Image (cartoon, rainbow, N blue to C red; front, side, top):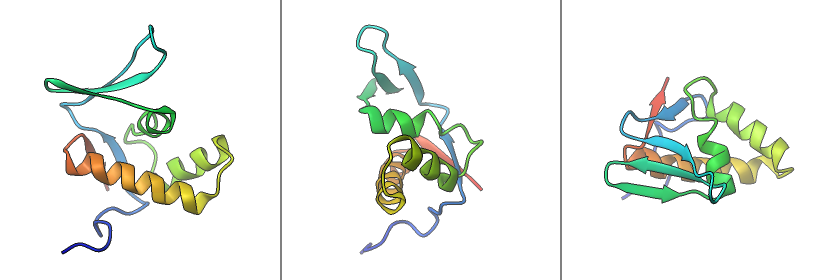
Length: 99
């Protein structure tokens, strides 16, 4: 039973794409696609904004701050959305969390 997010997922991790995942920009649609073996995930603007920052260089906290500023949104709301999105990709093995 899991009522909370994975305790290992903290704002101090530095997420990056897993080796099997590739982020591609589709010039025809102008959208980003997350490609992984035999599948793809079309990203909305928010998902693309998160994943383009998942380079292993920035912490989740830094990513949240940048997104809150870019989208002029409440940082608490952005934090919840980013944690949910990143946790889903971690669960699927599409993102790796660097300490």
